[in-house]
Length: 149
Image (tube, rainbow, N blue to C red; front, top):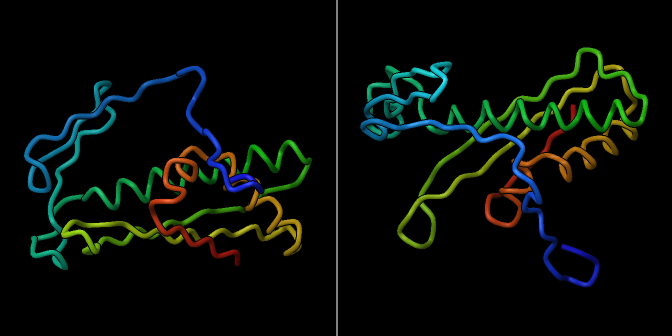
């Protein structure tokens, strides 16, 4: 949102890359990517009544968001000339019922920037949150908490 309260358009002006994946069998099947790099069994976690013998969409989302956010952090850190040695981003993605008889997600990102002081680290995390495509896609419809430690 801008200071005036109007939405900021974060849609791409040019598509630079397209990823393709296909699900077979939903939460009890497998997923593949067009290039063959992903070929994974998908299973419901025990907490949702499954056997847990496979990955699940929440794990895949956590992997994607954490790697994308970390790359955005590296990008803004490099632009500003900061050392991000040893930095990491971990994501937790929770799922649960929403108020509309469906399901919703919540995300917690844990960011570690061990060689930077807290003020600079916070500045870079805020900038990365504006740059990251996952942050832009989820803003306003998924609760995202960012913990800096």
